[in-house]
Image 1: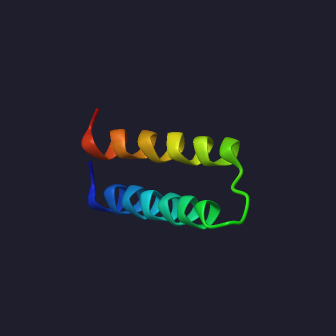
Image 2: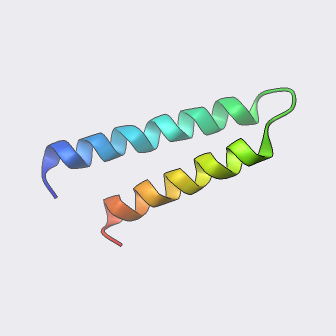
Length: 51
């Protein structure tokens, strides 16, 4: 994996985590949105780790 691609994936992973944090701190978090964000974050992590 080239460095630019790895950096882009790492950035996307961090962005997804920030969105998860923001959603979790809302007065009434949307559980469906949280599940979708967490699933997307796991997919990115799998690509980063080469799974």
